[in-house]
Length: 307
Length: 249
Image 1 (cartoon, rainbow over the protein chains, first blue to last red):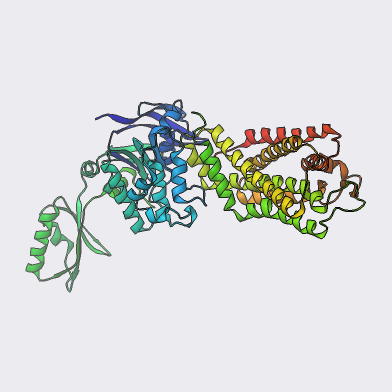
Image 2: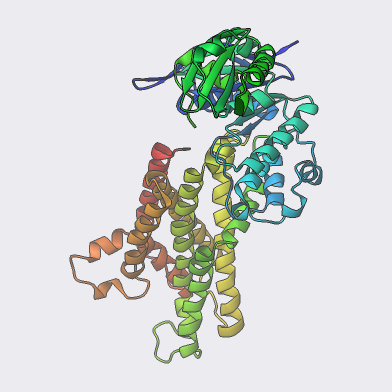
């Protein structure tokens, strides 16, 4: 696999604040790499340095073999960008915006109609940008990022501020673009989004990438246990009773009921049901919780990731 | 080609200005209405008038041209610039291969086209309804108009570069725009103002533009050409401030 973007020891400070602190990583061709982290973690600074909008204090960037600070003009021909706060001229019509942006590129093959069709924007072609909903504005922004048929697509916080339905639509759109074989580098503060879309996920906090792997490996490396959570009705049961269940390492009794920490949720569930049957108590609100990227973040940083 | 996107940008910005009611009112409708309403009061040549053969509309035409230029440069440029910066439009354009020089040139060109439209409307209405005429040289008139456009665009972009938000831009613009209309020999002669105010009036960029446009339209020999230096000074100041303070975000 070829490397699309390579960053080595990137650092960028704003006064006393170190926004990006000695970061090294690479994005492989045709993969979707996502950076996840809370607001202010340095995601946008990092992505904008690769786009050539900001100059790093130190370190090296190669995007498609080009240095964004010195060969920015050449690089801009080959990338597509969705900025975090997206706007274009408020009174411009969607169709006009696509034509205008296409005129800036040496090579802009996609014709407007085709792009409108791919993004299901045909019936909005004559609408003014400012009249569109948040979800549609982001759609237009993606269309604009695609006018030059870019090799790499940068998506900075593409679903922030969108309602759940619009967010799902954006995910479908990214899947469609992925099928066209483009490299995508995105940032998000939604773990769910990273887990769903990305081939690899980097977790960024206080300007450092603290983990970078496939979502599956990140969770697996955690060695975290699943939880079996439930209430017991009609009967007082001692927590000790559950400690004997197979694969259970620990039992907690909280306001929500019991939590069994287990290395194997299947075995534990079966045993639990059998025990309930034998001891004649009823289980309610029974559910299992598998470790997710949220737990990875919590474990690595010691904090919950808040939106 | 280095100017790729220039015409598309200029044309698109011109169309966007046409969709802006404030722009259309102040730089197209208002000057034309002003000339027409007063022109309709006396459409015959004014007897005993020092510029013989001119009617009131013809008398007001040069002031109308000045109004078009000032309104479009002072309202359009700063408000567009600050709005685009605040909304992130400038930043978005910056991640395309569009060059900074092309961007600046394109925005300027769009305002040029808009001003030309405003001036054409004045001439067309003036010709059809009031039979206005230019007694002096057309070349001098066009030269003066272009010089005025460049000067005021430089000042407009200077305001747009220094001021942070479009709300402030709107206020700052009005602070300059409205007093200037009254102090620049447009609605009333400078000689009516008290002595201490007159040097200020003469130092304003609209005053020489107004005086020379009028002299050319009335066919009066041009005197005191040094006053073009006042405009040039404002042009240089506006350009320096723009280059020094322009921000993308």
